[in-house]
Length: 272
Image (cartoon, rainbow, N blue to C red; front, side, top):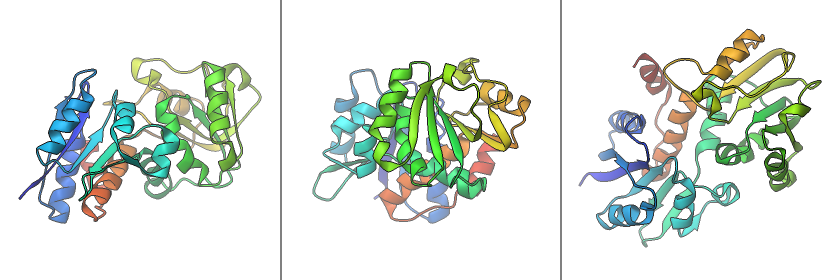
């Protein structure tokens, strides 16, 4: 029998996940079906119940349901507990629902393996203090950067996030107004503002020599943050499309026990 998987979200029509997982299945010979499902606000639990009761094996979860997925799971990985959000659900043979978050692992693999950017010993600035950033901080800290600064429009959120992860490495939180006079080797944008044509107020001399800039978001054209980075002398700039594919590969491996190759899938998506 073909095993069923899906991604839940709202909106969901733009999702690239069905293409990605079908490509993984073709590559590995795994017999799966993967669909994108629109879930109404407040309807996550009922939709997930129906999916698993019908024999579904696993779910990916995108906005705005990652916290709902965390509450729905009956077991959590340690990184999911720390993030307080889940993007991958899997039902085990005993019926328990395991919740994991694969975003951090996917982003760091894209940065360090696919792009070949070094994170160890670097001064890293992370823009934003929402769920997207919380979901990747643990994995970024595991790369042992020199330090991480989290900057956010609401400084209190950045400060709280830095306290929540303080035992894992040296990091601090601040508002954007505290950035002048600081320089960074890598800047990671974890805000969605650039997709709407907005960019955080960043000082012109923020980037150190040979700095890298990574936007966790992606679109049909470069984001506003990517344009800013190029104008201000970044050595290399990239969006989060590779992160999307890499986090999907981690989910696929969790479900199927096989890690797919990702580079060809990333290349194909860039052509579409």
